[in-house]
Length: 388
Image 1: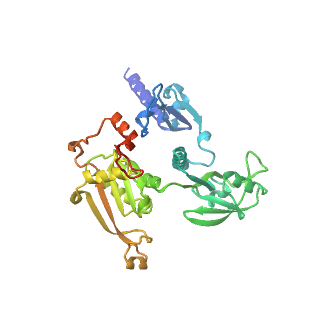
Image 2: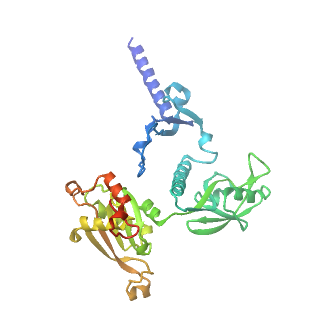
Image 3: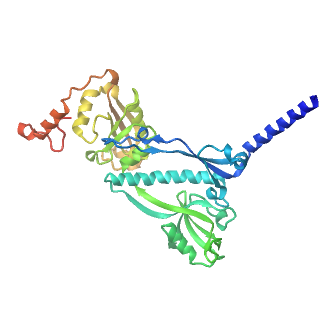
């Protein structure tokens, strides 16, 4: 009886160890598991939106991981609603998991840039997106390109023939016989290289030569400076940015923010000045999000009612500015150092919880006054707002 108990214990331990090994060891499959649907309204804020009701938008996260041997052998151990895909569906031959992760990160970055272009064009911005070449997103192991081409390279020419799209690249390489070398011009980290790469027959079309790379479209996107500043600023809360025309479109900037806590105005001002797009800004005014930075009357009102100079103004000395700034000292312009000073004005409400509530007319009264302003005979500068 004692031997039987010991044998059962040993078998149980072996069974647990086997189950654990099957759970830990990966299979040659990937498992896709959807999360619960979540409302998009908690994630997206559209300024000035007026929801009409009648429905909601939800999104679903899908988690992707390699399945275990246990899940592969026993389907009931998989999460509910999951889908299994063979490894080749997500990892083409010669591509490692690390390479695929890098590709996914690069694709996410490109999709963000493209989404920015689409959104800004919808808002009326004139955004230029110029095809620049074929971006290498993957290189097959053992392929002719594996020792020459790197992910992130941009192919811009084949044997001195310019290519701006993946289709043009495939067409130019396809003019050769499989086995012949091609000379690719690539841009890598700002340097242009000439690389001679061999070709092999395509597994799908033996008469078509390939070099063993996966490519996507590379574009040169010309975003407005204000958008660049907002994208490069590492802190959240920026609502609007106005590089004023009176400030030469570069030297004076007004930024409205959602103030997170006391001192956040100056913190976000330093972050803005640290972006490449704001490198020429000399005077930076930070206002609350109830102030329109494009309306100078509102900005001036914030300066008049929310600023104490000894507390809210900071001067940063000896920092690089713009060589075209006519106020630069002669010596700075001659040497090309372009050192200047920058001023931060925090025109946000100080101690906002205790700040006096502005006295404003009712909305219908303000709208009526604005409609009938001309009747009152009170002059106001053209383009300025009347009642806030």
